[in-house]
Image (cartoon, rainbow, N blue to C red; front, side, top):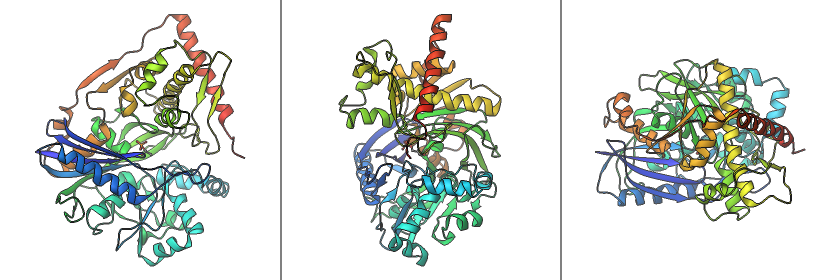
Amino acid sequence: MAVLTIDAGTTGVTALVVSTEGTVLARGYQEFAQHYPAAGWVEHVPEEIWQATLAATQEAVDATDAEPECVGITNQRETAVLWNRERGSAPRRAIVWQDRRTAQLCTELAEAGHEPRVTELTGLRLDPYFTATKLTWISRNDRRAWQGVMDGSVAVGTVDSYLIARMTGRRRHVTDASNASRTLLYDIHQGTWSPELCALFGVPEHALPEVVPSYGTIAETDPGEFLGLRLPISGIAGDQQAAMFGQNCYEPGSSKCTYGTGSFVLVNTGKAPVPPERGLLSTVLWQHPDGHRDFALEGSIFVTGAAVQWLRDGLGMIDSAQEAEGLARTVSDSNGVVFVPALTGLGAPHWDPQARGAILGITRGTGRAHIMRATLEAIAFEVRDVVDAMSSASGTDTEELRVDGGAAANNLLCQMQADQLGVSVARPTVQETTALGAAFLAGLGSGVWSSTEELTATWHLDRRFTPQVPDDSQRAAQEAAYRQWLRAVERAKDWVQ
Ligand code: G3P
């Protein structure tokens, strides 16, 4: 028995075939284009996400004899997608979670006094990150597409909904509670779309997907549309929630950090949402088939791996992200350079959509290795910012941080992270935990596994990074570097006028 899982991330789609032991039997991957039509704007072509999904899935299923029993979907969250219900074609590009075009609209809504109520209902805040203001923007600026939304011919959703519509031959328009909880339109207490918020953002409820549990009987793929495969779609979750599932963070207090385009630290807070404090978000982890939901506090950092990607693609400093560690290790420190990678504004815990990236402390002695080392340090500092916020919000200290995602393979980063946090960092053998989590959800939903205890047995430690206990002067230097980072963050804020 095996499970197919699809992780439709921000820059590409990964498909895995996973065994009942939780090992990866086969893999496929396909990147798709990023579009930056204006400063701070980020768009995707939905058809390209769909084609990448087909290509990655084909590659994975061709690479193994194991026949999948079911499929799980996980996805970049918050991104707003529109598609024609009958044809599946999209009337416009998707507006991506990183897109900042609605910063002014968010400010206006906050100034009009809406933020406390929005936070109370959703656990989120008024920031361009979330789906709702992207839809408001479309309603005001793309009349043709919005006409279809109003007359019911065009569906609205996040990437999971869009892919499921395509995979089922447009028969199903669904999302799960974890994805719904990122839209600013979903009441996390009631577990339903909020008529009040739909009215505030001008989004008709009839355009939104049905919200279903994160695992169980959800839909079935149409073989005519989906590579000849007829499979139950029995697991769906936003990528960060899926990574929590894949890291076996089922108990309150357990936490993980996924290093992807951005980095996202989540801690399981149990059966009820806790009020978000200190720049954190309160969000649905997953909904069980019996309807009850588990919740998390989340620290969403927008740019971490994307900063390395920018050094590669924007500056040509390296040829591949794998070279980052080697280059950074050629120097012993960043020689005073601090990089604030606020390339798409700042998320948790600072929240400033008008912030932009800054590299400070450059001298004649600065080389590319120092900038690369400063980039890895920045990732560790950003994660420390949110872990510190979590500790003060919850009053308890993190005991261990489980890490996953692309940059978790970087040993230097993991060690920096452990040193900055002062807690051990645990890396599992399978680091594609997002895709694994969706496989676990799907397998649980269709009976491949029968309990989370079974899944816990599949987690294996690859390596634990313990904080290197420095002497007092090293500790002082480390703290001084962190304070310098916080000063640099202040300088990057409020840059766009
Ligand atoms: O909230 C955005 C997040 O879901 C994107 O994750 O892994 O595509 O950077 P990733």
